Amino acid sequence: MMTKSQTLFERAKRVIPGGVNSPVRAFGSVGMNPRFICRGQKDRIFDEDGKEYIDFVGSWGPMILGHCHPAVTESVEQAVREGLSFGAATRREVEMAELICEMVPSVEMVRMVNSGTEAVMSAIRTARGYTGRNKIIKFAGCYHGHTDAMLVKAGSGLMTQGIPGSAGVPEGCTRDTLTAIYNDLDSVRELFAANPGEIAALIVEPVGANMGVVLPEEGFLEGLRGICDQEGALLIFDEVITGFRLAPDGAQGYYQITPDLTTFGKIIGGGMPVGAYGGRKEILSVVAPLGNVYQAGTLSGNPVAMAAGLAQLKILKDTPGFYDDLNRKSDAFFREMDRILTDGKVPHCLNHVGSLGCVFFTEQKVRDYTSAQSSDTEAFRSWFSYLLERGVYTAPSQFEALFLSGVHSEEDLAKVLQVVRDYVK
Ligand SMILES: *Cc1c(COP(=O)(O)O)cnc(C)c1O
Image (cartoon, rainbow, N blue to C red; front, side):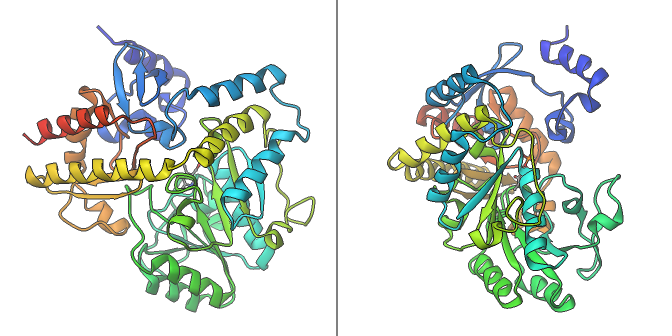
């Protein structure tokens, strides 16, 4: 007999491409069928067949307070009763912008959008408008949403122009996107040297969290800051994952490096579709209606979305020791997982920082896209399905992060570690 999830997936495949509204949800890379989720509570999610999981996806990051946090739910309920959308200026947008600017000092002005993709697209347009230059540098393995210019496959040589990494993206859209190697400052210097005075901005995930988890090595982010200053290019931190995740002021606070522009998403929406981009006032002043960089959105700053995000950010700001506790708990969890895998002689590399972590099944130290690719994805598959069957829900892809939340209990984390112990046996 088919499970309810299987039945739904069959129905979905008839009317939605691949049965899903975002590719990784299809469980394609692990060769399985997706579980359809109907409910969440704190660190648990429940599927249509009544199976319960300890959740390490957290909607890919937004649920840092766990599912159905009462303050977030109440704030949303209040907003819903007042009207879903007006397409006019509202109080919550002002409060949201003030709160982001207060929590992240490098952000003096911020514009709300509806996704991380939109935030990046708009930040890049702003950087180009501000500098009057066209070229952008990104890093292989960093994901910045699905906007045309960011869907670039790294060419074989660094000097080659960007080759589209997706069908449907004309070469013209990626010609100005150059690709460097994560944790390799020389690769960045070479690109600047080959394109003097032409680079508008360099965009980076300050912690790589879309090729598994790859940490910036000592001096890497600092080096990027120095090079951008020297070359008159803007430094954009894509903090769609790391923003309000590693610290109240994101990776820029955690590593003490100040970018010119920052993009946000995921956590700032509390589970609603929200993105934002911000930075120095002088730069954001080129955005319409102040300046001549056009950017707009019918539902941007939506009252319900703002209500969810505001409630979540206020809790993150006002709960004493929230990040210390979360990071300490996560650190202990990932260290113990690492120790169990090492003792069990499982070839692996466990990268983690704060509440983000990833197990690569490789003997190599993973520090960039190439070393991430050395992971044995067959080994990942067996790891993933073992965990899933035992009620531990992780991302169905090797190249994604594990996300912990403030409500993952010591008890549940201990249960997961026991599952890992059983796995290595
Ligand atoms: C998720 C993500 C995006 C895209 O955000 P969407 O809301 O999915 O459009 C951009 N950048 C990074 C670093 C992300 O993790």
